[in-house]
Image (tube, rainbow, N blue to C red; front, side):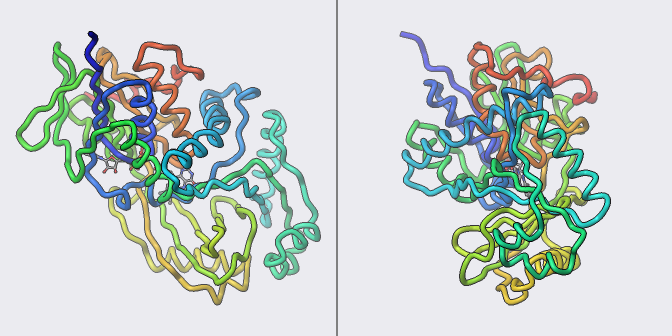
Length: 377
Ligand SMILES: Cc1cc2nc3c(=O)[nH]c(=O)nc-3n(C[C@H](O)[C@H](O)[C@H](O)COP(=O)(O)OP(=O)(O)OC[C@H]3O[C@@H](n4cnc5c(N)ncnc54)[C@H](O)[C@@H]3O)c2cc1C
């Protein structure tokens, strides 16, 4: 009789949970150690936009991973929903991309050419047509006669808190063990394999996977990963109206409005180098309000339901780190997904599971391997 392989995952955000679900479905005995409650993870705080992607025509490694994830998403969510009976808020709602400055227009024109090469549909739409399809934008359209609009049908959304809950519930059905409210103090590698310290107790496992998001540098300090990930804060404002005001996601530069079915509208976001400091600032929330009300004046009457922030894990090259630590075939990392952790989660989980179990990943992970650029002695 063979013994079941034991894998520990540190971090219960979307990356750790997706991986745990995938590995446990492959018969692995998985334990997740998680310091925070779901609400404290970066994953909970995200907007949940899944921009368009196409694996078949992508050459760039990150676009290939994104394309694979995009292919996996509908079935991945549908399986999660059928196992857990939780509506994850997956909607093929489409997205508008609006430009009203020369810079926004230039960057959108570049983007449309790139999407065209990737076979992604992006349709230039007249402002009058935009007004018909999103009537609440009509006052903005009238005040911005030289603006431009593009429609991207293949942009989708999920609701991160719901999907996080579903992932955890699904993991429970496949026997994943949860060690909650627990901080791993240190990790170490020895000839016998990796081990990690909780309090003054060392724990062992066959393989260890670090999914600590923005906190990877702190967790992996002893193996040289201290500077591998840069924390970047993003703030969010949640508005609530009685009825939905918009049908689709509205993107303008780095700002967006994400309408939910129940009348909530999530307004985001920003990139701030404030270390690990969470919280929101009155100034930033005011710019979000102004952005929302300029686009949709009726949002002046919306209730400010909540506001929060999350810490995105950014890497130096913009690529996530997915693979084993050099010279350590039993110690893996899956972190550094920056602004795309939700979008990249299913493909990260599938491909890393293949790598850990000695199979070939559908999309090569070579470009995401952990190398000397991440390790500092
Ligand atoms: C405002 C905002 C909007 C976003 N919008 C989108 C979007 O629309 N689409 C998209 O795809 N992505 C989006 N993102 C990015 C996405 O949220 C992240 O890429 C993703 O959540 C990273 O997931 P993770 O599992 O790596 O990290 P996390 O969710 O942060 O999980 C890591 C977990 O590891 C735990 N941990 C760390 N150290 C230890 C330790 N020593 N011991 C035990 N546990 C530990 C932490 O408690 C943490 O919970 C957004 C992010 C923000 C902030």
